[in-house]
Image 1 (cartoon, rainbow, N blue to C red):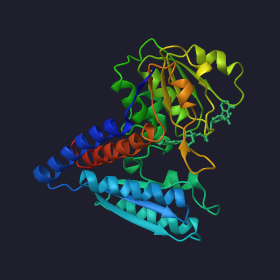
Image 2: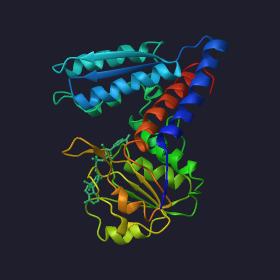
Image 3: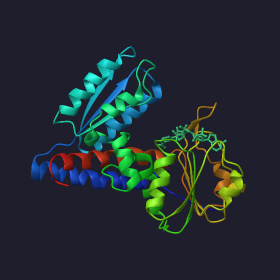
Amino acid sequence: MANIIDGKAVSASVKQEVAEEAAKLREEKGIKVGLAVVIVGNDPASRVYVNNKKKACEAVGFQSFEYALDENTTQEQLLDLVNVLNRDDRVNGILVQLPLPKQIDEKTVINAISPDKDVDAFHPSNVGRIMIGDYAFLPCTPAGVMRLIESTGTEVSGKQCVVIGRSNIVGKPMAMLLLHQSGTVTICHSRTKNLKEICLGADILVVSVGKANFVTGDMIKEGAVVIDVGINRLDNGKLCGDVEFESAEKKASYITPVPGGVGPMTIAMLMKNTLTAAKQQNGLM
Ligand code: NAP
């Protein structure tokens, strides 16, 4: 039976570190860290994410500025707001919650955020820096996964690492972070042949597909570390991951649950990036 990786506990320790540093910045330098969160429209899942980010800001002692814009907001109006926030000294990080309504081009908006305030690390300049290993901001979800792997005491160097999924926000940067730690990385996607065979070779398996119970125990190598990024809502309303937990935990040495695994880490790493942004903008890094 696998050890369950407690994402809530690991994320709490990351947030604790951030809160302590933020308090020090406030007391010693008079700097109050600020995160602006922009939401456009009424998507219920986005609303939950934004509320969680606001709560996390409060918990670590950041100021949060919420901008809730109407569903019919034009791209120009959103870009105007981003430009105002780029110039606002109280705002160290800017997060525009995705997805955006159809009339707005996400790429144009991401490109408009100042790379220094791009705490999601989605701006092409930050993505490029991740590629060359010279990053200011780590992409939140992959960085959270790295922290979870570290919490198991597993050394990535020399390990066979398999990432299923090649999204820009998870799969690709995930592969890069594993590579930077000298893992031997294979990226799989919907055209991959022999997926089961490839997975069976994985010492570390990271799954970000978005299909409930996609990876089953018979695809997992005995003793592998299994990280499930997927968040899927079943017809009965329950959340589940991309990995079939019951069969997988019989094979893995460590496994993340859903919920309570990667999810809480993403927000904790966002707080960490916002703190980094504040330090950089104040010449402290
Ligand atoms: P995505 O953009 O939804 O793309 C899914 C990826 O899975 C694609 O690369 C796709 O391949 C691949 N895929 C689909 N079917 C496959 C198959 N049969 N075999 C192998 N690969 C297959 O990915 P995402 O944005 O990374 O999201 C994935 C999941 O993670 C979602 O459930 C999302 O909600 C969750 N998520 C969680 C967090 C968190 O904080 N925990 C953060 C982000 C995302 P192609 O490229 O070939 O189409």
